[in-house]
Length: 402
Image (tube, rainbow, N blue to C red; front, side, top):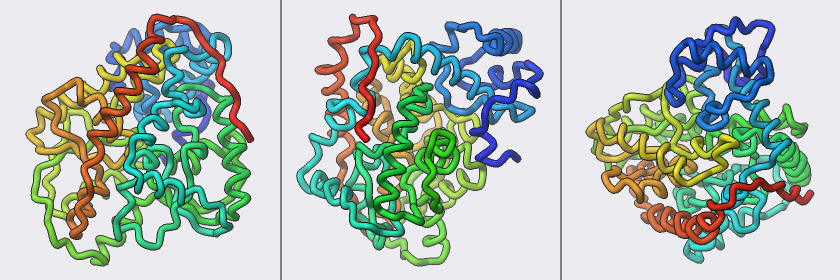
């Protein structure tokens, strides 16, 4: 079995046999083997392939499927990067760009209750400390999930301006990813961090495997919160006083499948420990679908809302066929996307974060705030993005402040 770090290495052109197995196995793009072979040959020659820049969600499925471990997604990302360098990102996508002051995250955060906004302010503390818990942008949009004894003792530090850069990685925006690395280097150095627990799976992979390739030199131990929670429940640290006796299905994080079967199994084991029965969607594990946000990543698409909606609705339809009562995510980004796009698909089961169910099981029911956040994200898109959808131009983004 390949190690996670191997899946983020550069594309190996010398070893690639252009067999097409990578793209033919992708659950998203749905192409036959002949098309897959021709596409890989064209990409290797530097040719632009229109459907790739429209349909590839950079979900890492092709890297997992490659029989020789050559990382074809990184080849695709070089084409994304070239398009971004030469043309710039779509203007209509500015609402989703991390460094824009009025992006979707900040719009949604502005609608949070005052107690949640005050909590976010405490995370900006820059008092030096050796061990922190990093929320990432997604958890910064769902801060109420951290109000649980399950996270007692965790010193949470971070915020929207300290993004790990995952959206830039998945869209080929290499310059912005380097800017993220420089900013994070300075921040981590000021704090003196030696150990970091990360609340999102994407952040784990970015800090461990991606950012060091783009200039992150700060050395520290990086651990996913999922492993801590799993160990705590296994050791009997928490008593399950309110078993969550329901049938659920799991939306896999794109990075969860990268971290491997054992990591994904721990999600299911935690759910079983609190009384849930897990039923799987048609596409699950390494073949799982992206929650829908990845459908907006290709440079031709540029976060067009129709693409995001189609991606999320496909997940909701599969989830509905399982007979589950709820869809469970362990990524707040998946939670946000599916909740917001679920407004366009009324039969959706409703999405719940793993933290929410675990907290409920130990007697700490959480407020139901994800629906209002989803509505505020859509409301912001209607006001700030929809008027730009008639503008097919490109833009060049402002650089990050140091």
